[in-house]
Length: 387
Length: 194
Image 1 (tube, one colour):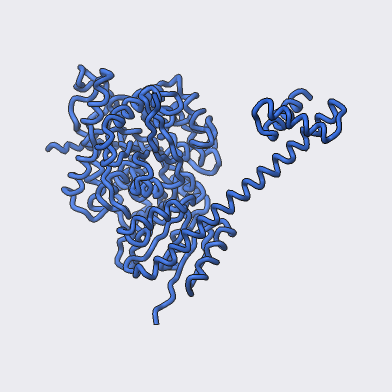
Image 2 (cartoon, chains in turn green, purple):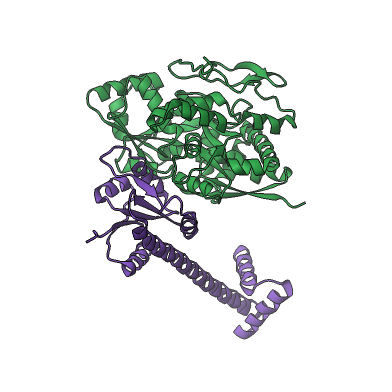
């Protein structure tokens, strides 16, 4: 039997692991699929090539998928998100000047945020690099600083550069810090003179980061292939999430056609042990990058709503309009439908109270109780969208 | 009189920039700036304030332009990608050629079209030149490997150059391989054995 080919675009990042492993370890082939993975140097290229139909599917920043669906790009196209490729995975990397300014302030979100708010009130203008205007990176930084009393705009500005370039932009003193997906934060530390101040997970521990963005028309016309792809990705995600496969995953990702960075650097986020500064201090935290688990890869409607509410004003659109688009873009029904065949226990409800799980606990699943990873915000806020 | 259009070409590679600028010069009288520095790109472009920005799709700095396109303050001029959202054939051929174009909103399409057309042609021709260059380099490298393999055979078996070449060719034919591949294996093996 010949395999059905699917062209998928990706940006070299550790959180593309599930797609890459689905291909390399044969999970896609077992579902009768041949994944042609195309590496792109920029998110603009991913967006435009999906718009033009060159790739029906891509590894994509969750807010970018929403922006495309809302027609904010040059060529609007509606996107469907049946699977979340990763939660978290970003690090906030500071240059030497900011590190010095922060001195011995405790490296937790609340202390750092309060200190920065104070500095900003005294006239310090903070410029943070992010990989794309429509990204969780930007939304997480905005949420964090606002919660600490900093009011954008004016006091905080954002500069955009692709993940592999942010380190150079920082070295050229164009920005004070940048938020980036792994391995680019770890690589910046490796190359010297920088410190990982925070992980994105320290702001929100269950942030939907990269999604499987599928052209809506393709999803409709190829529903059978899409189900097979979801199954392949789910099984690949379990393999990737197994700690004993961390080294192999890092080796595969380090290949030139994929991330093309040393496997020892890529491994940091996969094992959860980040080297945070030039002195070799190691920070081990849970959930720095989540790639697997039924509550991680599940497209929670409430996650989409959170993004919608954050970006609406910023994008000059009404909250209602953005919510409607976001909530129809995430498709937990497609996720469940595809995985039911495998007997996977998936969350029983489509939404949850975001920020409502300080510790891991069990929730209701379609096949009984389901172990859920923590979902909390650093400031303890809870978002109940059903209210 | 219509004002001259101001075009910025973002390109690190001097050869490619030259190819594009040359092409643009043939279609009209424009103010053209080549921008190479990528770290402060958005600031440089904001200062230049061009009507059109041309940039390769394989340039990772492309995302930096998103800041400009997303600019919503009334003082800044909005930028849109490509000629016209409705002209998808043009966009398709631009993407195939590997070029993106950013255009200030409101610029008349008949003024932009010839520029994009020539950019597409030039990007295509540059890709071709590069492919040819790679092919030539590969051929040269193969030539060297074959020469080394011949040398090894001449020394090991005490035969002359023609006989060594004939032996390589016969082996290649017998194994259904290219001469360069047989030569490569021989050189590698010799390296391991020595």
